[in-house]
Image: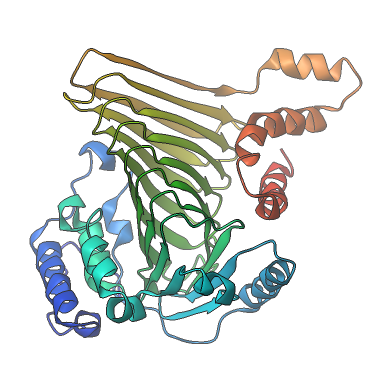
Length: 437
């Protein structure tokens, strides 16, 4: 259960490396070798300037043990939403080891596939072999290679051409306890002129700050084919002694649209990297994220919009709210290729600091290789506007209530992007953070 150091190597007899057919075992071994060859990212190197990479090294994998009562209660709540037709399906995932798909029979009749990735590598070989590791593989870095080698099981979703999944599909993940490590993985393929909404929720982990932290290293790959419409909501609400690392990449073809809503509330240390590649004319990607930190939480977020084709449009709006001694670092990159002309790309990051002990870093980046573009970025960091507080207090509103009203107004535009059934629960996370402001 000991934490790993920078000299750790994945042994060639690790049991995860033997999982799957021969082609998958070969790819796992390649990723194992890549992980072993790559050094730990040095502090101060670009995306690691604010976070210690050694915090994401841990050896013990999660046991396939019984889940906690909170997870069981949440499953029952989501089962109710499923029975009321508010969800298209529910997938439960304990520590990347015990995956169950519930209520997906009607979707299966339409050709929609929702299953464990370990089953899909056999039953849908053509789709999985073509797309798995295509966006997140050894070229992305040491921790991505680690996930690629050591994921035990994951989730696979496929929506056929011209098929609409009208209600959200909820993926409910639960991490193991203190000292555990899990490597969740998700592969999604949305067919031509198809439509899908996914809620990808990460919870659980360790709440014991005196023990070794729980560790989660996740990877999400999403392919949107021509004229598809995909909405992806990521909710990170891990327990207080959990270190969470997540890499997300989506690739959308001509005429396709992608809405990404990253939300982060939990964990001791959270590092997330969300990116979308706009790979065909008419592709559009919008990313609206929010994180709310309190105590001594540390968040390190990155976003990427890569315009690989012309006549594409992207927009990023990330909001950060911090109180107590919480820390946030955000780096956002817009990359427009030389041949990707007539593109529009916008990026905004706003940080609201509710306490004097908080700290926010924001680094917008532009990499534009042609002149036929419309592109802008902006960032703000500061406390609540005292004029706004004065305006509300002059109308008889107490200071604490006025602060809560202003913060609520700050985050409401992002909350409105969340599916209705999740909105109330996420609003409660915000309200909890606002207590004693």
